[in-house]
Image (cartoon, rainbow, N blue to C red; front, side):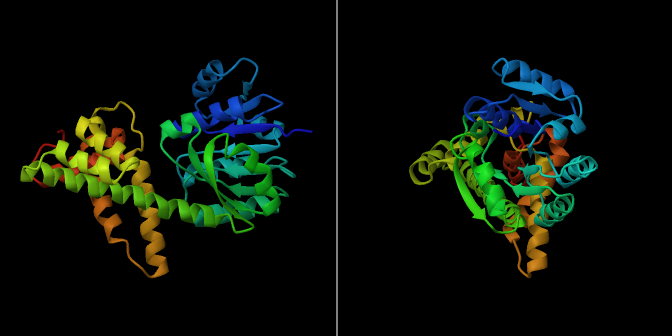
Length: 305
């Protein structure tokens, strides 16, 4: 008998992942959708193919009706609160799949808590931007009991993602550890591009000439972010692609992991300082790409290009 799936959390990434689960997940039963802001769940439900999804009116309802529960929430406090609330009901035999980006200690704690209730958990953080979530091009990192991971794989590569990084049989925290370290690569990429574009502007090379070099040498996300900096997308957006608050949360986790491991991430320290300036300038509307504006200000230029 095919499992009943539920999805909890509809941020920028969650909406696209839900869409692909419904359209490509070969689900025999409608996907149950729950979000604390119910309007988001209702709006998404109306956009999905008729009869392929349904809205739960409460967290308890979503968890009680489902066999596999996917969660994708913004920070540690949100996922802790949600899974602790879910565990107050009867969750024996259920499988929780958490796609949130959180500290690995949080993942480990939640997995242990869920296990004591007779349920299982797989960590499945994902790499990729919202546009990649929409197109099913995410990279899924899977960790947890091998048998549980096998139950999740049919919904990853070829459905919500283009590839899996498989840590089957390894502790769930390994997946979120990779996710935090991996996100520092994105943070440092934006910092490098911001410094390079600012110097190209100030030195007379010109941003177009630098972008041509980036297109030739560093295809992929470097080109995309370089274009965002040049176009002013980093401050013009109504809703951030990678919000500054979430980026600083990830930086904080990375710096904490470095400290407890006896090493340093000085590039992250610099980038986080610039993110603080983005927060000050733009508030919660700030995007990770706003680092460019902060670097520009340090060079005597306006935040907005």
